[in-house]
Image 1 (cartoon, rainbow, N blue to C red):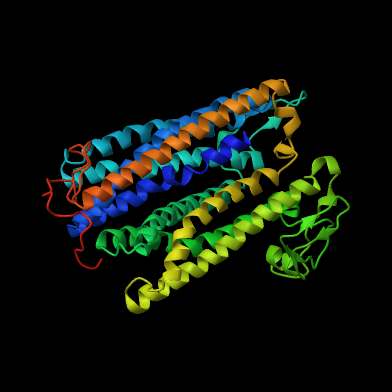
Image 2 (image 1 turned 180 degrees about the vertical axis):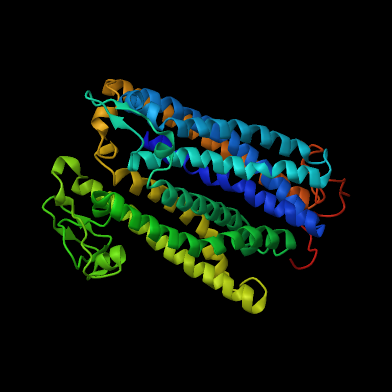
Length: 463
C-alpha cells in the first residue's frame, strides 16, 4: 500500500492542477489573441489526457487494495467514511467526460464555447480531492458516529463524518500544495529549455505563467503549513510529538532540525534551537507541548517511526522555506524590472523546484500516515486490527506484481511524454519525421490551419 500510494501521489498534482493551469493559458490565448498561448494550452491538454489515463491504472489498483489489504477497517468503518470515496468516484467519471470533450473541442468548436466547456474541469478535480482528503481527515480525527455495546459504529452523521476538525486545514494545504507543485514542474520543463539557449517566446511564456502561479501560492502554502501543524498540535498531540520528536511533556521545549530519537528518549544529531518548539506551537516559550511518554508505548509511534515522520516534516519545511526565497527572487525581478531574472542560477533553481515539490508531496504523506501510528483510525482502530490476514508469501507475490506493473506503466508514461516533446520540438523547427500525422503539425493557432513555413516557437515579441 505504501509503494502504491507513493507512486500514485506523484501523479495527483497534475490530475488536480494541470487542468487549471492549461485553462489559464487557454484564457490568455483567447483574451489576447495569442497563438503561442493557445499552442501551449493545447499541448498541456494532451499531457493532461495521458496523465489521466495513467492515473486510472494506479488509482484502480488503490481501490482494490483498500478492500484486499484493509478488510478490518473497511468492514467496520466503511459506512462512516466511505462517502468520501463515493464523491471521488463521481468526480473521476465527470473528469473523464470533460477531458474527452475538451480534447475533442480543439479545432471543432468555437473558441469561447470550447473554453467554457472546459472550465468545469478544475472543479471536478477539486471535487475528487475533496472526497479523498475528507476520508483521510476522518481517519485523523474520526467523528460522526457513536459506538454500540459491541463497539460497532452506529448513528452515523454524514455531515460530521465529512467535515471533521482536520478536514479544512488538510484540504486547503493539499489543494494549494498540488497547484504550486504542478506549476513548478511545468515551469521547470521550460526552465531547462531556457538554460539550453531556447529564449524564444514559446519557452518564456511556457515558463512565466505556471511559475507565476506557483510563486504567488508559495508563501500562502507556507502559512497554511504552519496552520495545519498547529491544528495537529491541538487535535493530535501525540502525532505532533512524533513529528517534533518531543519525548516528555513540558514547556520551553526546544526545536530540533533533523536529529534522531532513540528508544530511551535521547536525541542524537540535528540542530537544537532552544524553546522554539513551544513558541511555534503556542507563540510563547511557556506553551506546554505534549510528549510521546504521555501515552503508553503501545499507543504511540516507535522511536524509529517518530524519526521518520520528523525527517519527512523537516525536509518539507526546509524545501518550503527555500521555495519562498525563490518566489521572492522572482517577484523582485518581475516587479522591479518587469522581466524574468537574468541569473543562470535562478533558472537552475527553477528547474529543480518541480522535483523538490514532488519530494515535499511524498514527505507530507509520510508525515501524515507514519506520525499517526499505531492507529489507522486515530484512537479507534490499530493498523494490526485493520490489515488483512493473508499469508506473507501471498503478500510478497502481490507486491512483486504491483511493482512490475507500476514500473511498466510509469515507464510507458515517461516514454510517451518524451516522444510527444520530440514531435513538438521538430514541428516548431519546421522539421517533420516520417511518421508525423496531420494532428502533430497543427501549430500555433489550434482554431485554424498553420502554414508549415512558420515555426510555432518563433520569437513573437515579449510576453
